[in-house]
Length: 459
Image (cartoon, rainbow, N blue to C red; front, side, top):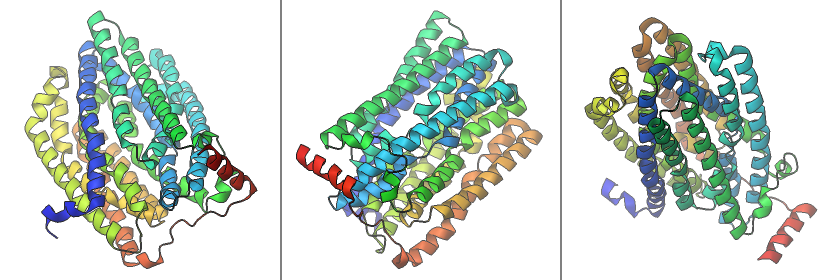
C-alpha cells in the first residue's frame, strides 16, 4: 500500500491525531522548559547547575525504580471491556492502580531518602546538599503515580493530557526566570523545579477526577490492593512484569546521570544532562504516538493482521521523524547549545554523537505495545535486561576510559540491543497470533453487581 494511502485507515488517523494533540503542547512545553533550563544554566555555576540536575535525576531514577506503570494495566483490562460497553473491568483496574501507585510511591520515597542519607556522596551529591536532595524526594509518590494518566487515556481525553503537559515547564521556567533576575542561589532554582513538578501532578489528578465523575466512574478511585485483582485474570503477573520493564526503560536516563556524576563530578552531569535532555525531547514523538497507539490496538482483534500492519505504519512514520530530527540536530546542535553559554559547549559534540539513537528508538517503539497486546510482557522484560545491562556496562567502561565522549558513544548501545532483542519475540507472536488469548469478560460477584447497580442508578 502506498504511503499516501495509509491515512485512509481511520485507526492510524486516530493515532496520529492523538499524537498531534499531545505534540502541539509538548512542543510548546519543550520551548518553555528550554527557557527555564537556560536560565538555570546561566544563573548558576556549572557545578551548581549539575547539582540541581543530579538531584532531580536522582528523584526521577528512584521513582522509575518503583513506578508500576499502572496506566498500561488500566488500558490492558479496561479498553477491550469498554469496547463491549462493560465499565466494571475498567473501574476495578483503576482501583487496583490507585492502591499500587500509593504503596510503591511511599516505598520509593523512603528508600531514596535512606540511600541518600547513607550513600549520598557516592552519587555525586555533596554533603551540604544532601538535606535538599532528601527533601526533594518527597516528590517521588506523585512522580511515580500513573493512575490519572491511565484513566484519561482510557476515556480518550488526550485533549486534557495535552493541556496538562504545559503546566510543569511553565511553572518551572517562571521560577527559574525569577530566580535568575533576583540573583537567588541554587536552592531557589531547585524549589522552582519542585513546585513545578508537584503542580503538574496535582492538575493531572484534578482532570482525572472530573472526567471519571462525568462518566459515573468516580468510585474507581477507591484503592483496592486485593479485592480488585481477584477479578482481573493474571493482573499481578502483568503488573510486576510491566513494572520491571518500565523500570529498566525509564530508569536508564537518571541512572546514567548518577553514574556520570559519580565518575566525573557534578559539572560533567550538567554537560551530559543538556545533551540527553535535547535527545529525550526529540524522542517525544514516539512516546506521544505510543500513548495513542496502545489503547487503539487493545481495541483490535490480535488474531488479525490489522494491529500488526498498524504497527509497521506507525513505526515507519516515527522512524522518518527520527531521521529528520537527527539531521536537524547535526545541523543545529551547536547553535542550540550555545544558548546555555560557552561553559557547556562540549554538550554540542555529545548531542551530535547521540543523534543516531533517535532513528532506532522512534522506529522500534510499536514493538513494546505489540508484546503487551500479545500477553508477552516477559519477553519484553528479557529484552530490557539484555539491552539495559549492556548499556550500563558500556557506559561505565566507556566513561571510565574516554570520559564524556565515551558516555555519548555508549548512549547508542542500549536502544540498538533493545530493538534487536524485542524484534525476535514480536515476529514470533505475529506468526503465532492465532494462539493469543485476549482478556476475558469478568464474571460478576455480589459486590460487583452492587457496583453495577449503583452506576446504573446514577446514570
